[in-house]
Image 1 (cartoon, helix red, strand yellow):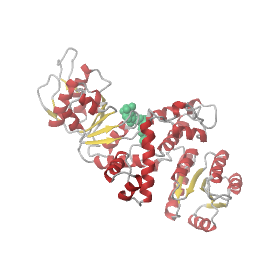
Image 2 (cartoon, rainbow, N blue to C red):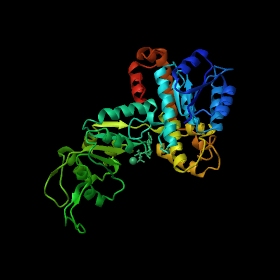
Image 3 (cartoon, rainbow, N blue to C red):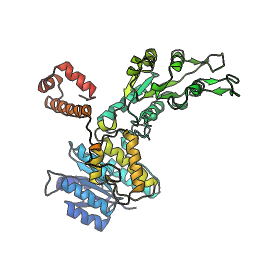
Image 4 (tube, rainbow, N blue to C red):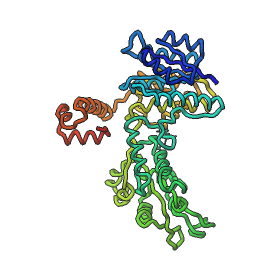
Length: 448
Ligand SMILES: Nc1ncnc2c1ncn2[C@@H]1O[C@H](COP(=O)(O)OP(=O)(O)OP(=O)(O)O)[C@@H](O)[C@H]1O
Ligand SMILES: [Mg+2]
């Protein structure tokens, strides 16, 4: 087992602290990029901690990033833990995108860095046993959901909070944002997790079949009903029922579903016996139900019944930092599954992914990376492999609302940091009233 840890750090004080922390390992030291590369070539360490601000220019991270890329070029399997200043999340995320294994933010805390380094060694051990673990594990609150951005973190907290209750949850979000994943999270963390998670897509089943699919039928209930069949609702008894694409539920069935939600009993088609069912109900839609209500296509009473707790899943383009972390996650998965030995993304690929609008959200990202990993002829994925053209107008986000929101968000965050998080002075700086600022904070999901 390779026990070598290379510490790339120019501060002598920190160097000795780190060395002292890792007495169990074979610790090597380097002060700058050039000596780091020499050490890597000579000693082949298994794990490297790399301070991103290296001499000669400690103000910038260019030497650190260059070292990261060169080390991975020599050996893509080395686990690199980048060390950044406190305010440099962006750099940490970028480093992960380029292939770093994890990051650690100063100030120096022995327990934390020991934990990260030990985990890296342990992971190598497991990998050499041909066991696969995902390095992104720490970012997964539940069910394999990856959520680093503040937007998704607060969504995950909300999911964790409502899961144990029996409230009916309505998940709202564009297609591919992870509605089904959240529904499963609600199930897993809920009190009915022993039961089944039963999903039914209201848009995918013809109206004539949907009723029996939901409620089941008795033998002889209609032509062709040659045996008794249990419906999805009954099957979910004791578990969770996920009604997907709720906006497409035919009007005639809406009343029937409402009755079930109110009384919690069903009758199979052709049956006359009410059957009590205890299920947790989660609904999802990408449509605007209020608009459908106005057009008379969706029952208002049903809407209120299903949206006891509405949760909005933000589109991928509004999740700060998540694009790269997710990209890296899918990259590792497919690189492994397809037995390829690719080295991650080029810098251009990272920036093209960040500036693209992702109308198909996480699903689109996943598909593009899968395709690129399978098809590429290179060692690193380029914008071309991802079929993203950095300069093409299509990939730029021209949506005025998105741009406005982004600028508003930046201005508000800046004003709030000037005012130490106090709303009244921030409102003054921004030239708006306090209630207006509160509304904006709520709308843009900013945490104060
Ligand atoms: N935060 C996330 N972390 C990891 N994987 C994710 C995340 N969000 C979505 N995915 C993956 O993206 C794909 C789409 O997610 P999901 O099916 O939950 O989206 P959806 O909102 O239900 O989409 P649709 O509206 O198209 O039905 C799935 O393969 C899912 O595993
Ligand atoms: Mg779905």
